[in-house]
Length: 162
Image (cartoon, rainbow, N blue to C red):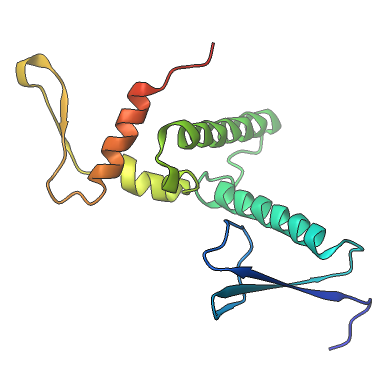
């Protein structure tokens, strides 16, 4: 393969368990994970890794907006309606991120909308009203009962900053 310009290969070796990163690793060996970047940017290896890692995060956000928030298809041929739709999708994305930050337990703060939807929102249950008090009864076989309970507790404790 011929390249039109010179490029550098930067190999990142990090111990396992590693701090969270948006970049995928190439392989794992002897307690380390390895990533390889190919770049022509005149950055130090650390700065190149930061630049591409931030970019990978943006790519994941775009993919989630297209897939989970239905931003992949613009709904109408009318500019103003499409602008309103885009703003609503952006608002819902931000609202969910605030919900994740303040109401979900730590391991689920980076979860996608699809994961949150399947584990917390689209769940089997029955709303009963003994003595007029609404109670949500979950089935005994519900796998994410602990996550659901912790999230409800966090929602009850949440107060808006003053």
